Structures are given as C-alpha cells and as structure tokens.
Image (tube, rainbow, N blue to C red; front, side, top):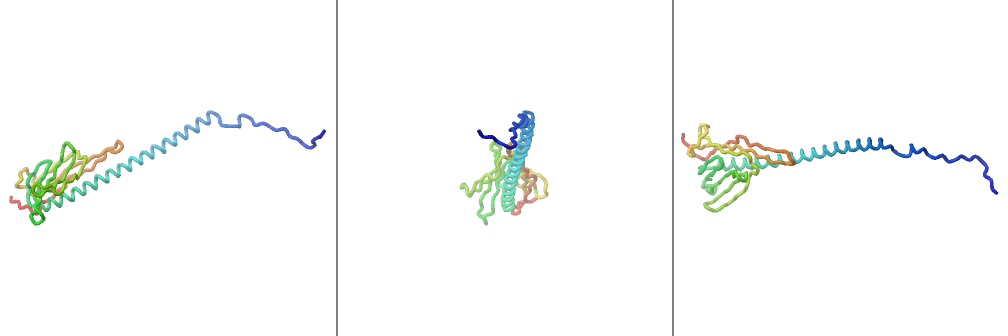
Length: 190
C-alpha cells in the first residue's frame, strides 16, 4: 500500500451566492441598457429627420431660385403681355430672339407651376418648375408702382408663392415673397 506524505488541503467549494448575478442586479443592468439604447435610438431618429428636412428645404430653395431666375429673364425680356391673371401670365418675346410666347401657369388642382414656350401652335419647351405649391398669386403694377388689373398698364409683375413638403411627419416650407420684376422692353404710357 502506498502512503502519501505531505500536507493535503481539502478542495473548497465556491459559495453559490458568488457564482452569478442576482435577479435584481440583472433587472437593474437591463433597465439601464434599455434606457441608453432608447436615448441613442431617439437621437439617431432625430438627426435622420433633421437631415431629411435640411435636404428637402435645400431642394425647394434650389427649385425656387431656378424658377425666379427663369421668370425674371422672361419678364425682363418680354415685349408684350398677352394674358394676365392671378394664376397665369403669357408673355411675348421680342422678334429678335424668336418671338415665342411664354406661358406661366399655376394649376390649382395639381399644385404645380409650369412654364410652356410656344412658337405659334408648336410647343418648344414645357416643364414643371415648382411642385407642392400651396399658395400662389401673380400681381401686376403700373409704371408708377401702383397695383393694377388693366393689362395695358402692366409694367412689372410680382409673384407670391409658398411651397410645402412633408418629410417624416415634418412640414417644410419655402416662401417666395414679393419677387417683383420689371418688363424692360414693354412700352407703357401713363
């Protein structure tokens, strides 16, 4: 028979209380993790909505600037005004640049603002300039700067418009307020 000499220590078992987390500790840590995740997610959603809103506003601003530049060019070049109204304007270009008629129209049903260029009965160019236009109005002024409804007196044109788009539940608007243009080539007598 063999004998073992020396010191021998018995193996101690771990106390069961030291093996893991208690239910209370798990609930507290999961609650804290959930609150952190909710705050991170809500911040992410907020920044996403803000980014979309900025992009939409930038698009609307670019469209309105492009429209105003084109409208200003056509109005300043116009030799004559054929039709005026709150929602439409038809201009006659000088013969030296083609003599086309340019028709601007706001469609109250589609909420669009379009430009159509015609040579006689042939459409040369037609495009939608603005979409989602909620408010729109043309106003006309005589040579003294007074508002007029008489076609023969119209020397300048003012456009008032408001566009709106909804992005992820947020309403984004862009205003074109009192952009007013003089018809330089149109002879008007007082």
